[in-house]
Picture 1: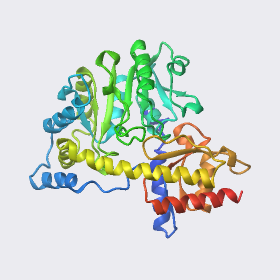
Picture 2 (picture 1 turned 45 degrees about the horizontal axis):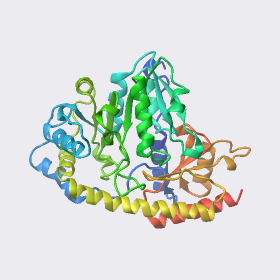
Picture 3 (picture 1 turned 45 degrees about the vertical axis):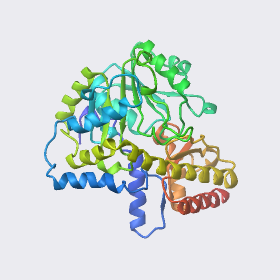
Picture 4 (picture 1 turned 90 degrees about the vertical axis):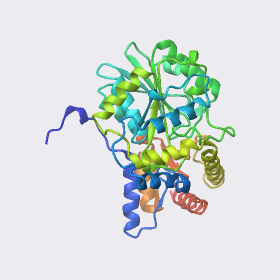
Length: 396
């Protein structure tokens, strides 16, 4: 069977595949602890969910403008405005079916054949797929391991060419949990500005930050004249425990926003109308929403400390990236490689069979030496999973 060249290099999402397999095995009666999923285990705050329910009751179940309702876009713009000196035009906001669509909209609208896009690595598994679907070429850039892979201008300059048109960056990072300091972030942004490179700043985990009491540094923490061409991507999925509602957004220069809106109008049209109403409830009551976020972040911080402590105690031979944000522990497993188990996929398969733990192999994120563990689950399951992991590793 012959397929279009558009998808000849396309690979399925590794994280979704692991999650699906874990759920299948669990349904078959296996005692699987699934630490593969990249989503909070909390329920959407009830009052936010009620916003969506009320929207349905009020008949808000029809088409909206392709980039989202004016009310939601204005509420998002107001929230962005609260953390920046720049004026945020609500017309520059494009609401999509999750931050993933916002990222793809940006890639497809900005990049094409002959372009190179630098991808901060380790990367979220969908970044290179989005670039290749846009017919551009992803170029992977790794920071030094002793810096938890955070990039410097020298790292970027070492791989940039005259074909470099974009840079995709995620902080806090999925999969590593690394967080750029404000000064580190400023230096990377300055490099992109001086090079005239489009910076796609994925800030979906921005509020899940353990380096301070507030969000991680982002584009809007910088003065407008410090930032070159950019697309800021965010949404409600992670911080507000709303992954299934599928609401993300982009904020960019107005001309680009219009192009992405037009593109979206020919792909999926508007995001779900009831979901927009739920997101509007969250963005319209920022103090209430941020209180919910702080409650969840406190739980993630406690779990981070629990997991890191158990690794230090039970698995001292497996080093990991310091998890300063998001809800992942990214740890090395190449010390476990041997005949018949020579890569991260084989390690994860072995752990699924032997220890009944579902993890995501690092090859999905560009580094086959590593594995990603999500600690977005209960303390009891985390303790049991890491003890199972320690027993399995100790048996080698």
